[in-house]
Image 1: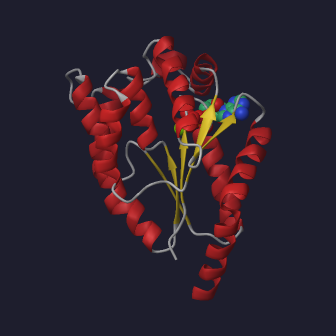
Image 2 (image 1 turned 90 degrees about the vertical axis):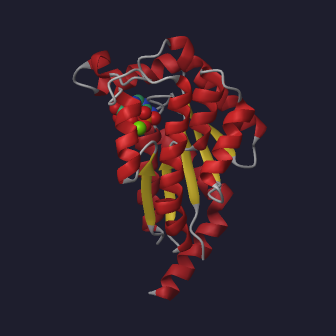
Length: 226
Ligand SMILES: Nc1ncnc2c1ncn2[C@@H]1O[C@H](COP(=O)(O)OP(=O)(O)O)[C@@H](O)[C@H]1O
Ligand SMILES: [Mg+2]
């Protein structure tokens, strides 16, 4: 039986990593096998691409077209070498950022257009369409504050994209809300400007109401295998 594929999306500091880890613990406790991964990265090639994207590791400034295609290149590698094999073996995948990130950062905030980016996304992801996408929603400024609070060097340690203007990050946030409204069958928005336990409860309610039955079936199938 195929595993479940859940993606966590949202602006910087919205709580994707925090909540994905909590979801992993809950799903494992129910008997699922979980693989957690992230974008860009998640494969040796993807992690090299991540260094280029976050810190201009090539040394020259990335043109936006190159940036877009590097995200997609990292994704193509992750999907085929990690995500699809895991799903086929019955492992469920939790991914920190996925195709919607490119749609909003490059399609909306960088202005390439949603249509173009979604068509390249489709090429990169093939059959790896998420069963559920949780859109973590927080005001862009609040999310960035959290990111700088967690770092010993504050804003000095922002990566190339985190250093973009607040208006860029606010476009990202609005972009996610637009996508969620356009694809309500796949996407659910959770307000993450609340205590993390409260957020975790909401996130779990979303997973339970959308995927509860599939989770129980999958857990039963995995128990039979063992
Ligand atoms: N609900 C919350 N309230 C306050 N701080 C939070 C909350 N969720 C996460 N954080 C903190 O904010 C920072 C960013 O969270 P993180 O999960 O890394 O976000 P993301 O992965 O979306 O960038 C971390 O230091 C984290 O501990
Ligand atoms: Mg994170």
